[in-house]
Image (cartoon, rainbow, N blue to C red; front, side, top):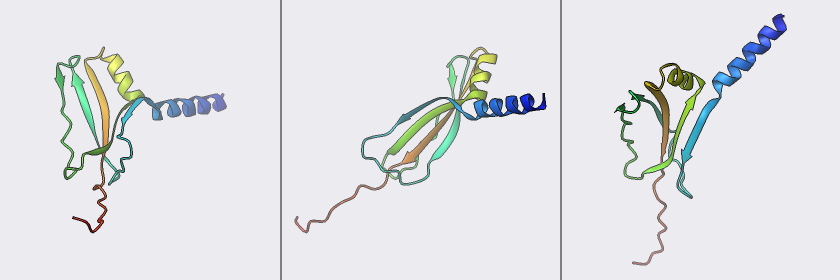
Length: 106
């Protein structure tokens, strides 16, 4: 019996640790300059009130990657509240400075 409880807890933990869905957008041949930043956004009252993501400080280079994902806890919260409160994790990485090749010609 104890073996089943431990197995059940391990399976539940593995399910809770996995993401329910994950979306990623990255331009072709883009190289991230940092490890990235993240924030949790909230949509309340079926999207009538939404938190805004902070504007990334990428020194004008733009984003190398943007990802949005949720986990089992966020999904359960959304279901339990009937969609009144829907959290989402947003992550982004800034792009490196573009490489400029000096050819000596002007």
